[in-house]
Image (tube, rainbow, N blue to C red):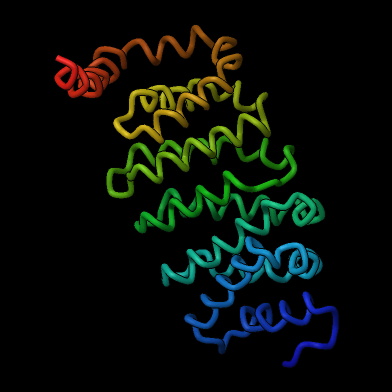
Length: 254
């Protein structure tokens, strides 16, 4: 079906959208369509292209949710990339139904929990860290998001420095959006973040430190509960990891 005449932004977006809605379109073409949308939103055309995305996001969002769980990893990741650039804009998601936002967050958490593809899991975390859904929607989904984060550290098959860094970005985003709920879940995220302060990768250490600094007032409110979890970790994990981190430096300076 041909796109109707309209502003340049709309006329260039609608063919892409229609290819995503068309079940006869090949997966490689749909992957290219998502990447084109993502590139235009993140590039110099962003301001001109965004109004068309905003106008038709209900349709685009429906297509994305149909593709993020695709067994085709390239299609799934391209859909996630386009989704991230869309939900980053608060005025795009401000009018979406709460049910859509909840369904989107559920799909993202499910990918982190169940996908065996490391890049797909990382991209799903990236979307959560970039989203601008209303805080009341995020608040209801904090338990699911924290459970997804726990899986990042418990599943060795998907662990990577990039994923750990992205998971910390999710923690920071949650601290920004829903501090009350993150205070309630302080023990859960503290036991994930604190060990990363002495991670061997500097980018992870710095991000963990940023999360700790931002969340410190919440940790202090729950200091008794947090201490009960962290103290046993000191001898079993934190001190050995700190020794690993410091020994190479000590050898270089000796």
